[in-house]
Length: 103
Image (cartoon, rainbow, N blue to C red; front, side, top):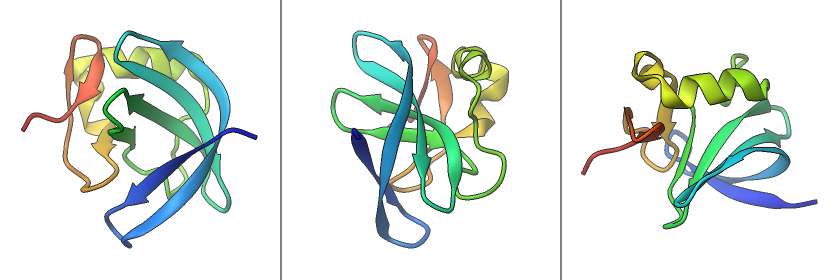
């Protein structure tokens, strides 16, 4: 089992997310479908610098678990509000086809 660590700013905890599927691999980021116990499956974008951006409601019931939906939403600026930086819940924009946080 391969995992990534997601730090949640809302409860200041680290969660181990099991990688279920690789959606896409790019030069500076890899997009996964992951699962956390009691949270279900959701999308996570892991950047080469260690930044993790997740579906905005990954601890709720509307995580992403369909690779095609994830591919569409990471690249479409209209869906930027569906993504946040896990470490501090910063809002994202879509830039160069990926959700990113400026600053």
